[in-house]
Image (tube, rainbow, N blue to C red; front, side):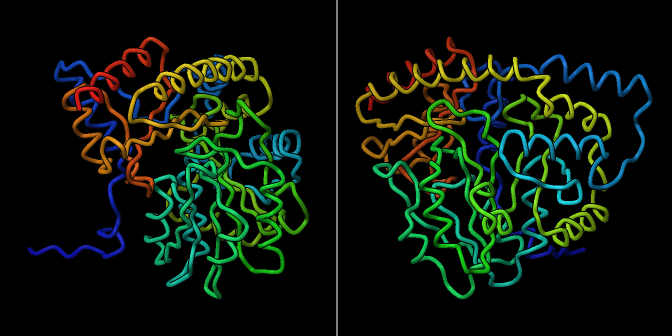
Length: 390
């Protein structure tokens, strides 16, 4: 038979970050000496208190279906966390738990974006945002930022990008791939543009606990207007080293939106696994805070080291990130083709990084410092040797 596939699925592109990470693992399994700085995944183990909660859940037989949106104890823990840490009040009816923050984003785009709806996305962006907009039949409207402006959009840029078809602005702070963090005053300027419009703000806050300089501010905490228009996305993958557990959540004051997401999830994956839900409570209620602080300190030390060493390489330029665990490195003086640069770096130097083109900005690459200092030092030395040869 001759197969015909849905256009919405064939329009999707493979995740460059996952593709590079997979290739690096394959080369390593073949015995090649590969140092990978491509994955957005902490190298730390999940805190013991979280693992103990999961083991206890298994031993008590907590292995059945749950409510689609999440068990009451988990929803309460999220609500309390948002109030305690972010100064936002959401009831348990205004929260839906999903299979990781990526799934949370998918559900939101599917629930809100229709054909030709415009979604404003600042560049550089996390690779999945424009793909999800495309899958939802929406239209991506990109705002180009610059390294000189710390990769942040301005009030004027946002105003110029808005049209009658604008449905949503996507904001990520701290950012993947740049690590920049929007200050309260910068967020207030964005809020002033959105006021008196019907534009949603999708706030991806997955890296909120990983801030080294400055203070994290949740956009929904700024005003009643921002609370009502903001859809808060978060999870435990990055801050609590729970990537494989797959737990994320959506919080919105629009209870109908939450009900619609609940319906979509009920007809697709139902609930996230029951054991993760019990474990997640320990990751939210402060029980793992000691481990989170240890990770944060280690990431800060790695950031400072990698920033200094990479900036010292002739032809490379990098801004110091305020948060997350990435350096977005300008390499256009050596090669404006970031894909070719990264392929050659992997082939000839055994170093895996992610090309900036995947984030909508060529001439850069993303370097993850979510690995040990020894590997970072060796990897940067290889990058230095490779760049000097060129």
